[in-house]
Image (tube, rainbow, N blue to C red):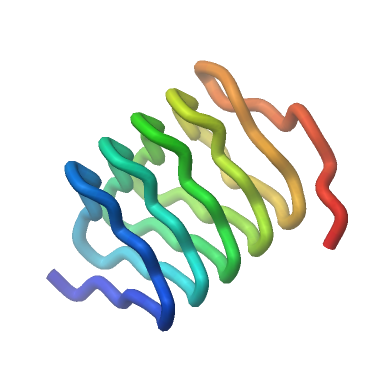
Length: 94
């Protein structure tokens, strides 16, 4: 309900996307990922298998959420986050 999905987005089997979410262009949502409501995912992001993005979180463009990560805070641009709760583990080149 009221979710916006950009162009060239891949949403794999078993992925869940909540209400009022905004997903940018060229995003991949891996199998079993759970994206809660009121989230914003920037362009060119990769959401790993089985990861969880809780309600109201923003993920900056060109960022990667590792498999199984639980994102509890906003994610800046051009980083990789992993763990439970997810923390920045790597700076990516823009």
